[in-house]
Image (cartoon, rainbow, N blue to C red; front, side, top):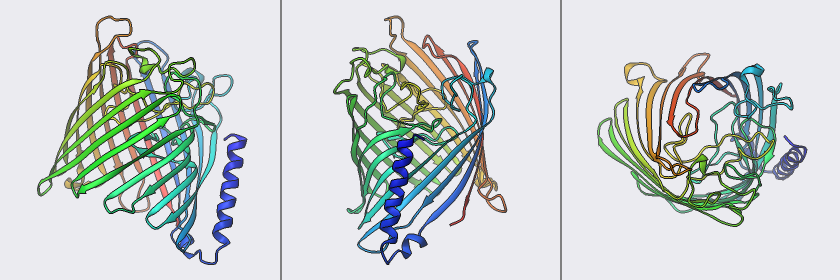
Length: 441
Protein backbone atom coordinates (compact mmCIF):
# COMPACT_ATOMS: atom_id res chain seq x y z
CA UNK A 1 0.00 0.00 0.00
CA UNK A 2 1.24 3.47 -0.80
CA UNK A 3 2.17 5.83 2.04
CA UNK A 4 -0.72 8.18 1.23
CA UNK A 5 -3.25 5.36 1.11
CA UNK A 6 -2.05 3.96 4.44
CA UNK A 7 -2.22 7.40 6.05
CA UNK A 8 -5.78 7.88 4.79
CA UNK A 9 -6.81 4.48 6.15
CA UNK A 10 -5.33 5.16 9.59
CA UNK A 11 -6.92 8.61 9.73
CA UNK A 12 -10.28 7.19 8.66
CA UNK A 13 -10.22 4.44 11.27
CA UNK A 14 -9.07 6.80 14.04
CA UNK A 15 -11.79 9.33 13.23
CA UNK A 16 -14.51 6.69 13.14
CA UNK A 17 -13.43 4.97 16.35
CA UNK A 18 -13.32 8.37 18.03
CA UNK A 19 -16.88 9.10 16.95
CA UNK A 20 -18.06 5.67 18.04
CA UNK A 21 -16.58 5.55 21.50
CA UNK A 22 -17.26 9.20 22.12
CA UNK A 23 -20.90 8.17 22.50
CA UNK A 24 -22.26 6.57 25.62
CA UNK A 25 -24.38 4.02 23.77
CA UNK A 26 -22.21 1.72 21.75
CA UNK A 27 -23.44 -1.69 22.87
CA UNK A 28 -24.73 -2.65 19.43
CA UNK A 29 -21.44 -1.60 17.88
CA UNK A 30 -19.70 -4.38 19.81
CA UNK A 31 -22.51 -6.92 20.09
CA UNK A 32 -23.12 -6.97 16.32
CA UNK A 33 -19.44 -7.02 15.37
CA UNK A 34 -18.04 -9.82 13.23
CA UNK A 35 -14.42 -10.82 12.76
CA UNK A 36 -12.90 -13.60 10.67
CA UNK A 37 -9.53 -14.86 9.50
CA UNK A 38 -9.39 -16.57 6.11
CA UNK A 39 -6.67 -18.55 4.37
CA UNK A 40 -6.46 -19.35 0.67
CA UNK A 41 -3.86 -21.61 -0.93
CA UNK A 42 -3.86 -21.28 -4.71
CA UNK A 43 -2.08 -23.36 -7.38
CA UNK A 44 -2.22 -21.75 -10.83
CA UNK A 45 -1.08 -23.53 -14.01
CA UNK A 46 -1.46 -21.95 -17.45
CA UNK A 47 -0.29 -24.22 -20.26
CA UNK A 48 0.35 -22.17 -23.42
CA UNK A 49 -0.46 -24.49 -26.31
CA UNK A 50 1.04 -22.14 -28.93
CA UNK A 51 4.60 -22.64 -27.71
CA UNK A 52 4.95 -19.64 -25.41
CA UNK A 53 6.15 -19.73 -21.81
CA UNK A 54 3.98 -21.65 -19.37
CA UNK A 55 2.95 -20.26 -15.99
CA UNK A 56 3.07 -22.49 -12.88
CA UNK A 57 2.88 -20.81 -9.47
CA UNK A 58 1.57 -21.44 -5.97
CA UNK A 59 0.83 -18.82 -3.33
CA UNK A 60 -0.68 -18.45 0.12
CA UNK A 61 -3.13 -15.68 0.97
CA UNK A 62 -4.24 -14.53 4.42
CA UNK A 63 -7.15 -12.21 5.05
CA UNK A 64 -8.53 -10.54 8.18
CA UNK A 65 -11.96 -8.88 8.17
CA UNK A 66 -13.55 -6.93 11.00
CA UNK A 67 -17.10 -5.63 10.52
CA UNK A 68 -18.49 -3.65 13.42
CA UNK A 69 -22.13 -3.17 14.27
CA UNK A 70 -23.65 0.29 14.47
CA UNK A 71 -23.90 2.50 17.51
CA UNK A 72 -27.34 2.97 19.04
CA UNK A 73 -29.44 5.98 18.17
CA UNK A 74 -31.23 7.51 15.22
CA UNK A 75 -27.94 7.70 13.34
CA UNK A 76 -25.57 4.76 13.85
CA UNK A 77 -21.84 4.76 13.19
CA UNK A 78 -19.49 1.85 12.49
CA UNK A 79 -16.20 0.83 10.93
CA UNK A 80 -14.93 -2.03 8.77
CA UNK A 81 -11.26 -3.04 8.55
CA UNK A 82 -9.58 -5.42 6.11
CA UNK A 83 -5.96 -6.66 6.06
CA UNK A 84 -4.55 -8.82 3.23
CA UNK A 85 -1.22 -10.63 2.81
CA UNK A 86 0.01 -12.73 -0.12
CA UNK A 87 3.09 -14.97 0.01
CA UNK A 88 4.48 -16.95 -2.97
CA UNK A 89 5.21 -20.59 -2.17
CA UNK A 90 6.52 -21.70 -5.54
CA UNK A 91 7.31 -19.21 -8.32
CA UNK A 92 10.43 -19.82 -10.36
CA UNK A 93 11.57 -17.17 -12.86
CA UNK A 94 10.99 -19.53 -15.80
CA UNK A 95 7.34 -19.93 -14.90
CA UNK A 96 6.52 -16.43 -13.62
CA UNK A 97 5.33 -14.02 -16.33
CA UNK A 98 6.14 -10.38 -15.65
CA UNK A 99 2.50 -9.26 -15.99
CA UNK A 100 1.17 -9.23 -12.40
CA UNK A 101 -1.60 -11.63 -13.37
CA UNK A 102 -1.24 -13.81 -10.27
CA UNK A 103 1.81 -12.78 -8.19
CA UNK A 104 3.31 -9.26 -8.39
CA UNK A 105 6.73 -8.86 -10.00
CA UNK A 106 9.79 -7.25 -8.46
CA UNK A 107 11.96 -4.76 -10.36
CA UNK A 108 13.95 -7.60 -11.97
CA UNK A 109 10.82 -9.38 -13.21
CA UNK A 110 10.88 -12.16 -10.60
CA UNK A 111 8.08 -12.74 -8.10
CA UNK A 112 8.08 -10.56 -4.98
CA UNK A 113 8.70 -12.16 -1.58
CA UNK A 114 5.27 -10.97 -0.35
CA UNK A 115 2.71 -8.24 -0.81
CA UNK A 116 0.08 -6.79 1.51
CA UNK A 117 -2.43 -4.05 2.05
CA UNK A 118 -4.59 -2.54 4.78
CA UNK A 119 -7.83 -0.65 4.24
CA UNK A 120 -10.93 0.41 6.11
CA UNK A 121 -14.40 1.85 5.67
CA UNK A 122 -16.36 4.24 7.85
CA UNK A 123 -20.10 3.61 7.72
CA UNK A 124 -23.24 5.40 8.80
CA UNK A 125 -26.76 4.00 9.09
CA UNK A 126 -29.98 6.01 9.11
CA UNK A 127 -33.33 4.24 9.03
CA UNK A 128 -32.98 1.65 6.22
CA UNK A 129 -30.07 3.38 4.45
CA UNK A 130 -26.32 2.85 4.82
CA UNK A 131 -23.44 5.01 3.59
CA UNK A 132 -19.96 3.44 3.37
CA UNK A 133 -16.78 5.39 2.66
CA UNK A 134 -13.24 4.04 2.48
CA UNK A 135 -10.78 1.84 0.64
CA UNK A 136 -12.22 -1.63 1.30
CA UNK A 137 -15.18 -1.46 -1.05
CA UNK A 138 -16.14 -4.66 -2.89
CA UNK A 139 -18.96 -3.71 -5.28
CA UNK A 140 -21.02 -6.42 -6.95
CA UNK A 141 -23.24 -4.47 -9.31
CA UNK A 142 -24.20 -4.88 -12.98
CA UNK A 143 -22.03 -1.89 -13.91
CA UNK A 144 -19.04 -2.79 -11.69
CA UNK A 145 -17.93 -6.15 -10.31
CA UNK A 146 -14.91 -6.48 -8.01
CA UNK A 147 -13.04 -9.67 -8.89
CA UNK A 148 -11.99 -12.35 -6.41
CA UNK A 149 -10.73 -14.85 -8.98
CA UNK A 150 -7.12 -15.06 -7.77
CA UNK A 151 -5.33 -15.09 -4.42
CA UNK A 152 -6.48 -11.71 -3.03
CA UNK A 153 -9.58 -9.71 -3.94
CA UNK A 154 -9.65 -6.53 -5.97
CA UNK A 155 -10.93 -3.59 -3.87
CA UNK A 156 -12.10 -0.04 -4.56
CA UNK A 157 -11.94 3.26 -2.69
CA UNK A 158 -14.83 5.70 -2.61
CA UNK A 159 -18.34 6.10 -1.26
CA UNK A 160 -21.46 3.99 -1.73
CA UNK A 161 -25.00 4.55 -0.49
CA UNK A 162 -27.47 1.65 -0.27
CA UNK A 163 -31.09 2.46 0.56
CA UNK A 164 -34.06 0.16 1.22
CA UNK A 165 -36.51 2.79 2.42
CA UNK A 166 -39.18 1.62 -0.03
CA UNK A 167 -40.36 -1.96 0.34
CA UNK A 168 -39.09 -4.28 -2.41
CA UNK A 169 -36.82 -1.56 -3.87
CA UNK A 170 -33.05 -1.40 -3.31
CA UNK A 171 -31.39 1.79 -4.54
CA UNK A 172 -27.61 2.14 -4.86
CA UNK A 173 -25.54 5.23 -5.71
CA UNK A 174 -21.97 6.34 -5.24
CA UNK A 175 -18.63 7.48 -6.56
CA UNK A 176 -15.42 5.45 -6.66
CA UNK A 177 -12.00 7.00 -7.17
CA UNK A 178 -9.32 4.30 -6.91
CA UNK A 179 -8.84 0.56 -7.23
CA UNK A 180 -6.28 -1.89 -5.85
CA UNK A 181 -5.58 -4.88 -8.09
CA UNK A 182 -5.72 -8.48 -6.96
CA UNK A 183 -1.93 -8.79 -7.35
CA UNK A 184 -0.92 -5.39 -6.02
CA UNK A 185 -0.38 -3.36 -2.85
CA UNK A 186 -0.84 -0.04 -4.65
CA UNK A 187 -3.89 1.96 -5.59
CA UNK A 188 -4.51 3.29 -9.08
CA UNK A 189 -7.10 5.48 -10.68
CA UNK A 190 -9.63 3.89 -13.02
CA UNK A 191 -9.42 3.24 -16.76
CA UNK A 192 -10.40 0.83 -19.55
CA UNK A 193 -8.38 -1.84 -21.35
CA UNK A 194 -5.64 -0.32 -23.48
CA UNK A 195 -5.70 3.10 -21.77
CA UNK A 196 -2.77 4.58 -19.85
CA UNK A 197 -4.39 7.65 -18.28
CA UNK A 198 -6.22 7.40 -14.96
CA UNK A 199 -9.65 8.71 -14.11
CA UNK A 200 -10.68 9.38 -10.51
CA UNK A 201 -14.40 9.56 -10.98
CA UNK A 202 -16.64 6.54 -11.48
CA UNK A 203 -20.18 7.67 -10.67
CA UNK A 204 -23.11 5.29 -10.62
CA UNK A 205 -26.73 4.94 -9.56
CA UNK A 206 -29.43 2.34 -10.00
CA UNK A 207 -31.69 -0.11 -8.32
CA UNK A 208 -33.37 -3.49 -8.11
CA UNK A 209 -37.19 -3.58 -7.93
CA UNK A 210 -38.72 -6.82 -6.72
CA UNK A 211 -42.03 -6.52 -8.56
CA UNK A 212 -43.23 -9.88 -7.25
CA UNK A 213 -41.49 -12.58 -5.19
CA UNK A 214 -40.40 -14.17 -8.49
CA UNK A 215 -39.75 -11.12 -10.71
CA UNK A 216 -36.96 -8.53 -10.34
CA UNK A 217 -36.35 -5.57 -12.66
CA UNK A 218 -33.02 -3.71 -12.71
CA UNK A 219 -31.70 -0.43 -14.05
CA UNK A 220 -28.22 1.07 -13.49
CA UNK A 221 -26.27 3.98 -14.94
CA UNK A 222 -22.51 4.52 -14.72
CA UNK A 223 -20.10 7.20 -15.90
CA UNK A 224 -16.34 6.78 -15.94
CA UNK A 225 -15.07 10.29 -16.49
CA UNK A 226 -13.24 10.77 -19.80
CA UNK A 227 -14.07 7.22 -20.87
CA UNK A 228 -17.71 6.15 -21.11
CA UNK A 229 -21.37 6.34 -20.16
CA UNK A 230 -23.15 3.02 -19.63
CA UNK A 231 -26.81 2.08 -19.21
CA UNK A 232 -27.91 -1.35 -17.99
CA UNK A 233 -31.33 -2.94 -17.92
CA UNK A 234 -32.05 -6.38 -16.51
CA UNK A 235 -34.87 -8.80 -15.78
CA UNK A 236 -34.75 -11.90 -13.58
CA UNK A 237 -37.77 -14.19 -13.31
CA UNK A 238 -38.11 -17.55 -11.58
CA UNK A 239 -41.09 -19.72 -12.51
CA UNK A 240 -41.84 -22.49 -9.98
CA UNK A 241 -42.80 -25.73 -11.71
CA UNK A 242 -43.57 -27.92 -8.74
CA UNK A 243 -41.60 -29.66 -6.02
CA UNK A 244 -37.87 -29.27 -6.69
CA UNK A 245 -38.40 -27.72 -10.13
CA UNK A 246 -38.08 -24.18 -11.51
CA UNK A 247 -37.36 -22.28 -14.71
CA UNK A 248 -35.25 -19.11 -14.46
CA UNK A 249 -35.01 -16.36 -17.07
CA UNK A 250 -32.18 -13.81 -16.83
CA UNK A 251 -32.04 -11.01 -19.44
CA UNK A 252 -29.30 -8.34 -19.58
CA UNK A 253 -28.82 -5.31 -21.83
CA UNK A 254 -25.93 -2.81 -21.92
CA UNK A 255 -25.57 0.39 -23.95
CA UNK A 256 -22.14 2.08 -23.76
CA UNK A 257 -20.80 5.21 -25.45
CA UNK A 258 -17.59 7.23 -25.21
CA UNK A 259 -17.40 10.57 -23.45
CA UNK A 260 -14.85 13.27 -22.61
CA UNK A 261 -11.31 12.47 -23.70
CA UNK A 262 -12.10 8.93 -24.87
CA UNK A 263 -10.32 8.24 -28.16
CA UNK A 264 -7.52 10.71 -27.50
CA UNK A 265 -3.95 9.49 -26.76
CA UNK A 266 -3.85 7.84 -23.35
CA UNK A 267 -7.64 7.46 -23.26
CA UNK A 268 -8.01 4.96 -26.10
CA UNK A 269 -9.97 1.73 -25.63
CA UNK A 270 -8.38 -1.31 -27.25
CA UNK A 271 -11.82 -2.86 -27.90
CA UNK A 272 -10.59 -6.09 -26.28
CA UNK A 273 -8.09 -6.59 -29.10
CA UNK A 274 -10.84 -6.62 -31.73
CA UNK A 275 -12.46 -4.42 -34.37
CA UNK A 276 -13.86 -0.92 -33.78
CA UNK A 277 -15.65 1.28 -36.29
CA UNK A 278 -13.81 4.23 -34.72
CA UNK A 279 -10.58 2.78 -33.24
CA UNK A 280 -9.95 3.86 -29.67
CA UNK A 281 -13.52 5.00 -29.09
CA UNK A 282 -16.26 3.27 -27.10
CA UNK A 283 -19.49 2.49 -28.96
CA UNK A 284 -21.28 -0.72 -28.02
CA UNK A 285 -24.57 -2.45 -27.40
CA UNK A 286 -24.53 -5.91 -25.82
CA UNK A 287 -27.46 -8.10 -24.85
CA UNK A 288 -27.61 -11.58 -23.40
CA UNK A 289 -30.24 -14.07 -22.31
CA UNK A 290 -29.86 -17.09 -20.05
CA UNK A 291 -32.43 -19.77 -19.22
CA UNK A 292 -31.96 -22.31 -16.43
CA UNK A 293 -34.11 -25.36 -15.69
CA UNK A 294 -33.54 -26.80 -12.22
CA UNK A 295 -34.70 -30.27 -11.20
CA UNK A 296 -33.59 -31.48 -7.78
CA UNK A 297 -29.81 -31.25 -7.72
CA UNK A 298 -29.62 -30.78 -11.51
CA UNK A 299 -29.40 -27.43 -13.26
CA UNK A 300 -29.42 -27.14 -17.07
CA UNK A 301 -28.49 -23.69 -18.43
CA UNK A 302 -28.42 -22.40 -22.01
CA UNK A 303 -28.01 -18.88 -23.32
CA UNK A 304 -26.97 -16.53 -26.07
CA UNK A 305 -25.11 -13.22 -26.18
CA UNK A 306 -24.68 -10.67 -28.96
CA UNK A 307 -22.04 -7.90 -29.07
CA UNK A 308 -22.78 -5.14 -31.59
CA UNK A 309 -20.63 -4.62 -34.70
CA UNK A 310 -19.33 -1.12 -33.87
CA UNK A 311 -16.96 -2.06 -31.03
CA UNK A 312 -16.28 -4.33 -28.08
CA UNK A 313 -18.06 -4.45 -24.73
CA UNK A 314 -16.41 -2.15 -22.15
CA UNK A 315 -15.92 -2.37 -18.39
CA UNK A 316 -13.63 -0.70 -15.84
CA UNK A 317 -10.24 -2.37 -16.32
CA UNK A 318 -6.94 -1.00 -15.03
CA UNK A 319 -4.74 -3.70 -16.59
CA UNK A 320 -3.03 -1.37 -19.07
CA UNK A 321 -1.93 1.22 -16.50
CA UNK A 322 1.88 1.17 -16.18
CA UNK A 323 3.77 -0.37 -13.25
CA UNK A 324 0.90 -0.73 -10.81
CA UNK A 325 0.02 -4.43 -10.95
CA UNK A 326 -3.65 -3.70 -11.52
CA UNK A 327 -4.26 -6.50 -14.05
CA UNK A 328 -7.47 -8.47 -13.80
CA UNK A 329 -11.08 -7.31 -13.80
CA UNK A 330 -14.54 -8.86 -13.87
CA UNK A 331 -17.80 -7.83 -15.54
CA UNK A 332 -21.48 -8.69 -15.42
CA UNK A 333 -21.89 -10.92 -18.45
CA UNK A 334 -22.43 -14.68 -18.59
CA UNK A 335 -19.37 -14.98 -20.83
CA UNK A 336 -16.90 -13.73 -18.21
CA UNK A 337 -15.47 -17.23 -18.13
CA UNK A 338 -12.37 -18.84 -16.69
CA UNK A 339 -9.97 -17.87 -19.50
CA UNK A 340 -11.68 -15.62 -22.06
CA UNK A 341 -14.41 -12.95 -22.22
CA UNK A 342 -16.18 -13.40 -25.60
CA UNK A 343 -16.73 -9.62 -25.72
CA UNK A 344 -15.40 -8.35 -29.08
CA UNK A 345 -17.25 -6.53 -31.83
CA UNK A 346 -19.79 -8.62 -33.74
CA UNK A 347 -19.37 -11.68 -31.54
CA UNK A 348 -22.31 -14.04 -31.22
CA UNK A 349 -21.81 -16.47 -28.36
CA UNK A 350 -23.93 -19.49 -27.53
CA UNK A 351 -23.23 -21.09 -24.18
CA UNK A 352 -24.48 -23.83 -21.93
CA UNK A 353 -23.75 -25.33 -18.54
CA UNK A 354 -24.75 -28.39 -16.56
CA UNK A 355 -24.27 -28.45 -12.79
CA UNK A 356 -25.11 -30.96 -10.09
CA UNK A 357 -25.42 -30.66 -6.32
CA UNK A 358 -24.70 -34.00 -4.64
CA UNK A 359 -26.62 -33.15 -1.46
CA UNK A 360 -29.53 -35.22 -2.71
CA UNK A 361 -27.24 -38.25 -2.90
CA UNK A 362 -26.08 -37.85 0.69
CA UNK A 363 -22.95 -35.78 -0.05
CA UNK A 364 -23.78 -32.20 1.03
CA UNK A 365 -21.11 -29.68 0.14
CA UNK A 366 -20.09 -31.46 -3.07
CA UNK A 367 -20.93 -29.71 -6.36
CA UNK A 368 -19.71 -30.01 -9.92
CA UNK A 369 -20.31 -28.27 -13.25
CA UNK A 370 -19.22 -28.23 -16.89
CA UNK A 371 -19.69 -25.29 -19.26
CA UNK A 372 -19.10 -24.69 -22.97
CA UNK A 373 -19.03 -21.37 -24.87
CA UNK A 374 -18.73 -20.92 -28.65
CA UNK A 375 -18.32 -17.46 -30.19
CA UNK A 376 -18.61 -16.77 -33.94
CA UNK A 377 -18.83 -13.77 -36.31
CA UNK A 378 -16.04 -11.86 -34.51
CA UNK A 379 -15.18 -8.93 -36.76
CA UNK A 380 -11.59 -8.94 -37.98
CA UNK A 381 -9.48 -5.85 -37.29
CA UNK A 382 -7.93 -6.02 -40.77
CA UNK A 383 -11.14 -6.69 -42.63
CA UNK A 384 -10.47 -10.37 -43.23
CA UNK A 385 -12.74 -13.32 -42.55
CA UNK A 386 -14.73 -13.34 -39.34
CA UNK A 387 -13.09 -15.18 -36.46
CA UNK A 388 -14.35 -17.74 -33.95
CA UNK A 389 -13.38 -19.14 -30.56
CA UNK A 390 -14.55 -21.63 -27.95
CA UNK A 391 -13.91 -22.47 -24.31
CA UNK A 392 -14.71 -25.47 -22.12
CA UNK A 393 -14.65 -25.10 -18.33
CA UNK A 394 -15.04 -27.77 -15.67
CA UNK A 395 -15.04 -27.44 -11.89
CA UNK A 396 -15.67 -29.43 -8.74
CA UNK A 397 -16.18 -27.92 -5.28
CA UNK A 398 -16.34 -29.52 -1.86
CA UNK A 399 -16.88 -27.86 1.51
CA UNK A 400 -16.69 -29.86 4.76
CA UNK A 401 -20.01 -29.51 6.55
CA UNK A 402 -19.19 -30.48 10.14
CA UNK A 403 -16.43 -31.36 12.56
CA UNK A 404 -13.18 -29.61 13.38
CA UNK A 405 -12.61 -28.62 9.75
CA UNK A 406 -16.13 -27.35 9.11
CA UNK A 407 -15.99 -24.71 6.37
CA UNK A 408 -12.75 -25.96 4.82
CA UNK A 409 -13.26 -26.03 1.07
CA UNK A 410 -11.44 -27.22 -2.03
CA UNK A 411 -12.02 -26.21 -5.64
CA UNK A 412 -10.52 -27.79 -8.74
CA UNK A 413 -11.04 -25.96 -12.05
CA UNK A 414 -9.84 -26.78 -15.55
CA UNK A 415 -10.41 -24.74 -18.68
CA UNK A 416 -9.43 -25.09 -22.33
CA UNK A 417 -9.52 -22.22 -24.86
CA UNK A 418 -9.09 -22.40 -28.64
CA UNK A 419 -9.40 -19.58 -31.15
CA UNK A 420 -9.32 -19.21 -34.94
CA UNK A 421 -7.45 -16.08 -35.98
CA UNK A 422 -8.30 -14.26 -32.74
CA UNK A 423 -4.72 -13.48 -31.74
CA UNK A 424 -5.32 -15.06 -28.33
CA UNK A 425 -3.04 -17.97 -27.48
CA UNK A 426 -4.61 -21.41 -27.26
CA UNK A 427 -4.24 -22.51 -23.65
CA UNK A 428 -5.22 -25.04 -21.02
CA UNK A 429 -5.55 -23.76 -17.49
CA UNK A 430 -5.77 -25.57 -14.15
CA UNK A 431 -6.47 -24.05 -10.75
CA UNK A 432 -6.49 -25.84 -7.40
CA UNK A 433 -7.73 -23.73 -4.50
CA UNK A 434 -8.06 -24.47 -0.77
CA UNK A 435 -10.11 -22.07 1.35
CA UNK A 436 -10.66 -21.93 5.10
CA UNK A 437 -12.30 -19.24 7.19
CA UNK A 438 -12.59 -19.02 10.96
CA UNK A 439 -15.01 -16.60 12.59
CA UNK A 440 -14.28 -15.67 16.18
CA UNK A 441 -16.88 -12.95 16.75
